[in-house]
Amino acid sequence: MRRDSMKPTDRHPPRGPSIGDRVSLSGRIVGIDEAHHRVTLDLVDGTMLASKEGGGRNGPEAPQERAPRFQALIAAAAELPPARTAIVHPCDALSLTGALEAAGKGMILPILVGPRAKIEAAAKETGANLDGIELVDAPHSHAAAERAVALVRAGRADVLMKGKLHTDELMAPVVDAETGLRTERRMSHIFALDVPHHPKLLFITDAAINIFPDLETKRDIVQNAIDLAQSLGVALPKVALLSAVETVYPKIPSTIEAAALCKMLDRGQITGGLLDGPLGIDNAISRDAAEAKGIRSEVAGDADILVAPDLEAGNMIAKQLVYLAAAEAAGIVLGARVPIILTSRADSVHARLASTAMAQIYAARRRPPGLSPSDDRASRASTPRATSP
Image (cartoon, rainbow, N blue to C red; front, side, top):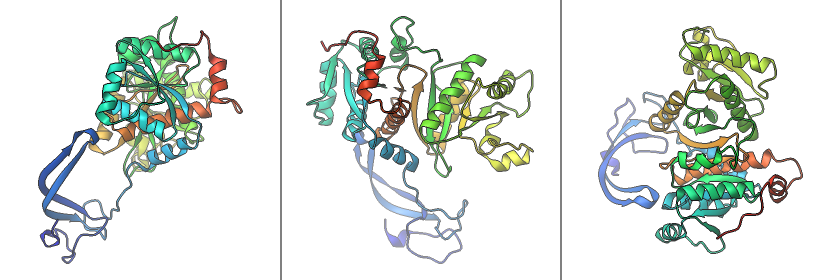
């Protein structure tokens, strides 16, 4: 970009660009790297929108490190023993690369489960080396999910990771009453979002598993999210139970359920966190909005966890933050015997690493003190040791 092409639009005297400026650029695409989602541009012109000294719509801004809280999670996971992880149907470049990068960082010991020919083709496409990595052959995605669940039941895997298959395909054998991974608690999905300019990780649940959860299911959704946040270092997670209004209103069922969940905390049916609700999303995350409506609590304006009234609302909140606020999203499922890394097919390798880090940290910190991963697997084994075909 030519320095003399910069046209100041604020009141500051003309000067060259510097770190921290916000600029509008124009140019042409000269290269596309689809494998790494990168575009190379030839910049020909630019306009300064805001300098780091001020003058822009949002005031002074400084460059932000990409997803710094996710970076911290990945670094913390690298200090823990690797989790034995069954990757289900990693038959495309992105899911295989994410798993192998996590293995390269010492986060997981991978077991690749799926059609051998397709996995090897994906490895060839990316230039990956599969030497020394266990591969369990399965003819198709349904069979891969079943065999991965069998590995967990046999005590050979601590974590499940979704590859290139639909969520329904992965979860069907997981929820099977006879041969699945059910526990006394309902399974639920938790998004963790690293939102630019938000001071901490934001958890959103449930946006992927429970469509219209009833009160008992919401109790488990809340408890799963509290357990995850605690394992990631939030000592007393603040949980906002979302609705459209902040008062209990009989015609809006989510307000009744929010009030009941708060009472369940009082009676010890939910533990480990602080609850408030019903709350609108504005007064759940903005102190100014909460104060403007006269809402005073330890949760209002400072929530760690947002509990959506249903899947549609949770999914839209999470995706709005990703696509309109440039948030990075990671996600896992809890409530099964082991954490399940439930990534989106559109997730970047970085997002997959963050999801893997969450699952690894959760698995390690929920394990009884002094118990190694291999001891833990042995203690949970309920079927004979599975063998690779």
